[in-house]
Length: 299
Image (cartoon, rainbow, N blue to C red; front, side):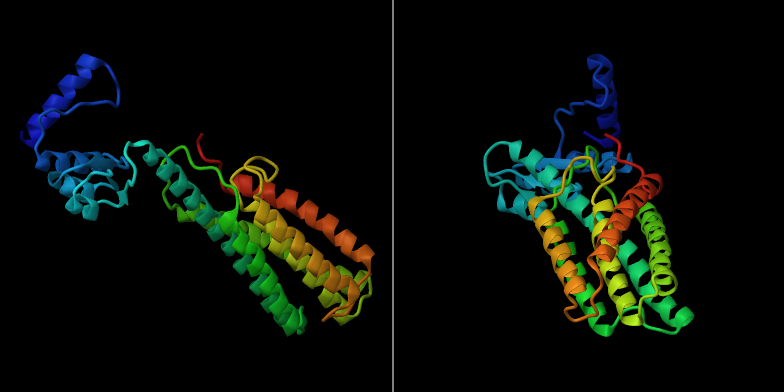
């Protein structure tokens, strides 16, 4: 059966069964399977292909996801991108849902890194250029990086919702949302420094401690909860257990360092509590901005 005859057979079947998006192609040859996969891909579909013989190998290789069933030949298994180890096709659903959750974690991680890497280093550079001082000590910068990386690793075990549609990397909205969150982060960063120096009349060392505490709570925590999903941060899926444990440890450690004066100048618990409230307000504002810049997925 040639390609043109294959297309005519498809149209006739669709008109007879009246099932949109559904078609049966009887009596096809191995080349026809390959052409079918290729035609569907050219039409913009993400194509999955299953088979159990040597003649299915070209189509399995061409498909976006070639699926080899448990009893398939070695040639077909080598051509496929997914090999089922159990009989039946039910494992395909689990594989699709699992891969889409992995994709969402990767996308959330990228958005988090964009917002963090555009805000904090730029703030450090602006502090040196505009004020002529380091806004944090070198030791505080190292601790900030360690605490931030510790919490960010919990993203790999966070709860996420699998997309109802096939996912694709769309970088422009991610860059826009990340840049917007970074710009929003710079405003309170500079505001806290100015208030600490000119209103609260704190010394340089205490100002650095206050900024250190703020950056850990805002850039290291608030941004992380904003970027972990497309909806509002209080909506499901809720944060995973290890994500919450990492947050609790992170906040506890930085609070002890700041209030007890370990490795830095101490600040009062009142300032710590006020900074936590400000971080909560920042969390709501940043979440609204994310919703505007990064639309929700279609359900």
